[in-house]
Structures are given as C-alpha cells and as structure tokens.
Image (cartoon, rainbow, N blue to C red; front, top):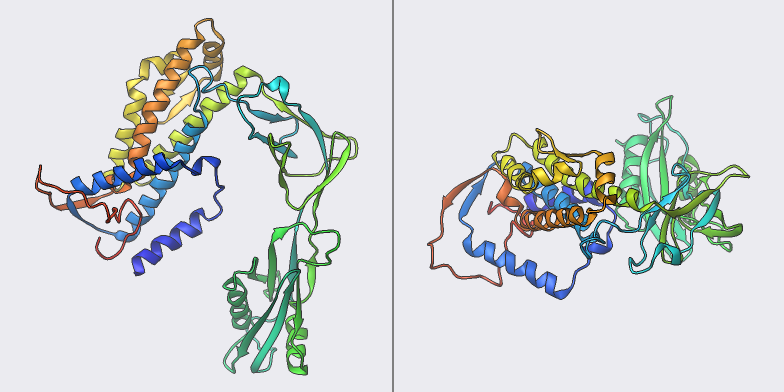
Length: 429
C-alpha cells in the first residue's frame, strides 16, 4: 500500500492543478474500446519484475499524462480533411492583459460570431488572513487546550488544538497549518517568514470573488472563554490582510463582474484576465486569420508531440525510454519527406520544429488539399501510437521479464484489469 500511496501522492502533487479538457470525457464506445485493449494486454503480457518502483511509478504517470495531453490535442483537430487544422482560433489584441480561447462550435462561421472589446478595471482576488509575526523559537501561547470557530457564508467549523510545554511558536503554527489544510474546506494555510526571521500563519481562500451582500469568504473568531481569546490575540490569525474582490470589466462599454478571472462570453470564448487596463485602453477579441490559425493548430500538435519526446529524453537512464522515442518518432519519420516539404522538420533529437513561412505557403497554395491530407494522415497514425503508450505505459519502463505466457493458450481475465495500465502499483511489482 505504501507504494500505491506514493504513486497517488506524486500524481496529486504534480498534476492536481491540470486543467480539465472537454476531450477528457468519452462515449461508452470509446471507454469500451479502452477496456478491451487493456484486457488484450493482460492476456498477452509476460510476468516481469521492476527495479526502483518509485521512479518507475513517476515515469509511468508522466507518460500517461503527456500522452493524454497529446490525445486531447489530436481530438480537438477532428473533422474533415481540410477542416481538421482550420479550426477557429481566438486572438486578443492585448495578450498580456486579456487572453482568449474559442470554445464554441466549429459549425459556425467566423462571420456569425461577433467579436467584442473588453476593458479590465479590476482583477478577482481571494481573501488572505495573516497572523502576528512571532519568534519561531519561543512559545508565546501558554500550554493548554484551545479552540476557534471558522465561519464561511454557508457553514461553521470548530477547530481544536493543544499546545504542549515542549513546543515552539513555529511548531504550533505548523500544527494549525496542517489542521486547516486537512479539513478540506477550500482554504490553504502556510507558515510565512518575514525578513526578520519571524513566523506567522497565512490562511488563504481558494475561491476568488465575493457577492455584493457578503462581507467575507471566511471569518475566524475565538471560542467563548478568555483562554481562547488570549491565544487568538497572540496568534492574530483572525486578521484579514487582503479582502476578496470580484473582477470588474467593460464588455463593449457595458459593466460586468465575475467571481473569477476566467469566464465564458456568449458560450463562444473562454476569457482569462491577467492585468488591468488604463482608463482609455481595451483589448479586442476576434479570430486569427485562417493561415495563422492553421499554423497555430499545427504548432499545438507539434508541441504536444515534443513533450512526449522530451519526457523520454529526461528519463534516458531507463532502457525503456529509448523505445518510447523510437515508437513516437517512427510515425514522424514515416512522413519525413512529406512533412519536410510543408515546413515540419525532424531534428536529430527526434523533436519536431516548424518553419511557419513554409507551412503558411503550403496551406494557402492551390494544392493545399494535399497538405491537409498529409497532416490528417500523420495525426491519425500518431493518435494510434499515442493511445498504445497511454494504455500501457509499463511497456516503456526498465523491467526484467520473468516468464512468458504459453503462446496460443492464453485466456482473457475480464474482471482483472491491468494493475499497470490502471496505475495501481503495489508490492506485487
């Protein structure tokens, strides 16, 4: 179980903030196909042992995540031969302040979808409480049992803690930080250190923005009794350092607000605010020219492919990493001449690079249909190889084969999916 826990801990610490794509959802037929592939792998897979399980679990998780990202990019390029890479791409005239992504239907023409102007007046922010800064080696709270109430706009929570004789201010704050973080109430707590080396507890809401009729996102008050009140006065964690704010902006001159800095406009655009405009400035959101949009979509595919290659190079000490590079790059090398002719080059490291001028010429030439056909075939072949790596990442790690199954006499085990494909690694490795 310890190895399983470490695998999940690595996954959560590394990928917990990954954005969820609409291509992460699948039809029943797609899920059934994945399951059938896993069953087939189990039926044919030999028995093997793995050294350095901790490193292998991390590498296998990284393979699954990078190949999943590549799969999502490929899925976003589904469509007819010419339309595959000619997807709508939103653009902002001021990317540093406002960025935009088109999330609407590809069935609508760009002429049917109106662009707009946006002027950012205020960014959304979260609430932050910072307590009093204390000497980390002293103990300013008397030993004993204490409690405080933490109120949100919907619920109230009581926290209890004990201070022992042998503790310090630092250990007390670390204890409180762990108490808040493990509560799972949408707050994160850390111990902050100032320039003098003093420490204080910092509690921040994960939520940004606040309703007009709300005074706070969370409020900390001592429990009834002089003892808890004195402890609160020493720690000062009820002090609000920064109040929560909603974002404020003008859309075509009309004022709007949002709890977050990322929101959707007209179900067509995902907008993310990064900064504030001066009074007379704004960003214009519309679409990129067709040739630029095509080049950007090809670049997205190349970037996702290169991430898989870079991952394999980063684990070059593993014998299996060479197989991952060979399997992925073999698809590109099969199209070497065709890709090179339209500005996509294979580097010595097996990474891909793009000559945008040559690519733009290719997709705007009279025979552009042939270019789209090449890109579409390359995408489809790459998707098949990527799916194989996603389903069975253990095929690309360093392992020792113990015994092969009896050829021709194997049976499927439909109720035992691969512990390796499912990332359920444990001591049986």
